[in-house]
Length: 205
Image (cartoon, rainbow, N blue to C red):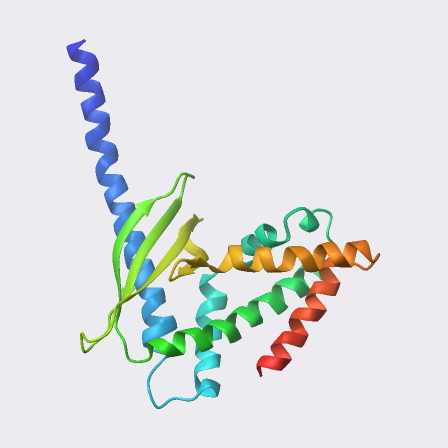
């Protein structure tokens, strides 16, 4: 029994630092994304047109839009023509860039700091809590939670929750009805949705 306890203790001592190192890596990665996507881009005095290109670059590099697309489309992603899927991802990515560039403009010149990293239920999944700090202390702080997964030797963001609202879930719920209606009208669901997304982007621009 003593040998078993000693063996378990040895395993715990070996594994625990590994978890700590992983959390530290995720914290460093997420703070880097925040610095590049929000702090370096959203400065007072800059225009939306100036913010969009660098924001787009960071988002495309760090978000796993293939994963997000599969989640949003659900069963409609099965047996989907690769070109139709690529078109959807391209349109959805640009909508995300345009929409969140406007949301994050509210945080111009405000520090955003990672406060805590929690491991998710799935292997290689993490939830990273960050706070947008009101610099003068007169207003409230804002919470952004980043859902991060390990991909190969690095990490990718698969969702952000801004003030309790999940990006991925919001779009999934919003698009579910449009996909269903297109299928009911014998229209190709995903290409039809992609066209509507591009129309929405044009409206934003």
